[in-house]
Amino acid sequence: MERYKAAMVGGLIAGVVTTAVMVAGRKSGVLHKTLDRDAVDWIDDLTGSRAMIGDTGTSIVEFANHLGASAAFAAALPKLRELLPSLSPVALGTLYGTALYAVNIGCIAPVLGITEGEVQAGPRKATERWAVHVIQAVVSAVLAERLASGIDTDSDSDFDFDLGLN
Image (cartoon, rainbow, N blue to C red; front, side):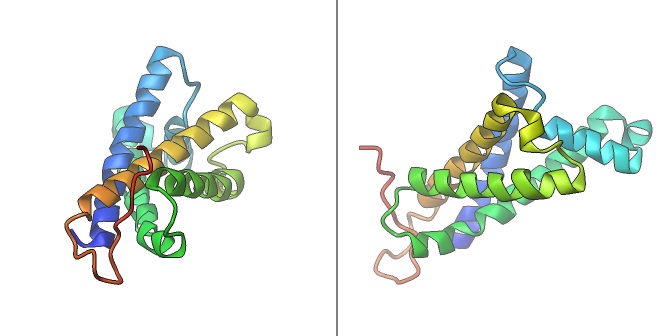
């Protein structure tokens, strides 16, 4: 599969995985109120969506947004691979997930009013949010590598790299 398409498909799958992690984490008590619930509250605050389509409908809107963002962010992975060719997908995903967390949750989300800000959230909630971003980016990077593994490895545009787990 072409490397950008592979990355975006990997991002979509990672979006499903991280949503499952957040839901399971909340239901088990391991995680507190997760970012997806903050986003549902934000959507409702802006649009009154719960009154029109209910909590489930608002959650579906947020999930669709989450999947779109996951695919869009994963589209950067092939370029990051070119810039950092020696990193394993796990290392690349960890760095990229950390960067996404810093920009999206540390800067943009508080300005938009989606979150309260990471200092106010406290270290546990901030760590949970960071970990979910890292999981998302690592899953995206690993899946992108696997999905793109059929392309010509003699090409300059390949997305072939070792997982670094051996």
